[in-house]
Image (tube, rainbow, N blue to C red; front, side, top):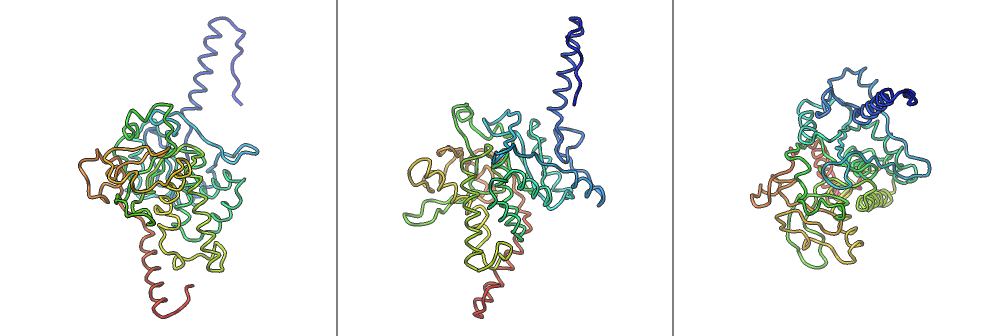
Length: 361
């Protein structure tokens, strides 16, 4: 507990006491270190740790406990860019020992956005986070704890993090190119404009006709949302139900799910199922079908319901052929994803088993 001076002193004493109180408050509020904050608050600088240091740091990592009876504990910090979306960027990794290249990509977020705080959750602290924030959703905890495939866990974790506390999600292999304040046109920054979530087109395809699945796809390596996002709730429930369905169809528990059981990771926890869930969520909000016709070919950010959809150049310029008529690239994705090789190998094994009429493991 911080002891403050007696404010019943002289006028000068009262002024001094108030000044000291403000100094203590500002120091506590502004310097709220993330797990790995460096000496420069504008740069997310990750130290190179020894094994013992990493273990000690990991053991000391803490997460905010939810208040009694509450499902989530939103952390709404200072915001200088987009209404109701906290100025905080989140990342996750197996442990704190990220590469020098990844460190540079991570640091770009706070270099471009000096008001941002950055936080990296590891396998261990990510599990603590889920348990702390979703005590009222034992089904979420059960599925998250049971997942043994790293990419499925990583996908689910990102949705849970932003659902619980809001802010910006970024994979380790993404560079921020523009400040987030430049992402959103001025007409969408008013307090009366409810932006629940921001997503960008990974694939921008035209409508394929009635009865067909959406052709376009939003990327999940970068997105942003309010705490307790309405759309992220739908995404999380959709992913949880999908994983439970796969386990039931194969007569296994969640821990028994293998890559060979999946049609494709993107359809189970990745950007495709995220896209489908968002469109279903928007359909519920707007009372109509929402599909490619609402955003395909957009040249500027478009607000559909409460989701701000960014054109293909914004988050996936290379994927969309580096268009020059959609404004600047806001981030650069370096496509370092390590899960793709394991997924490709699993698909090949599944193909061989089907050719030989063997059951999937």
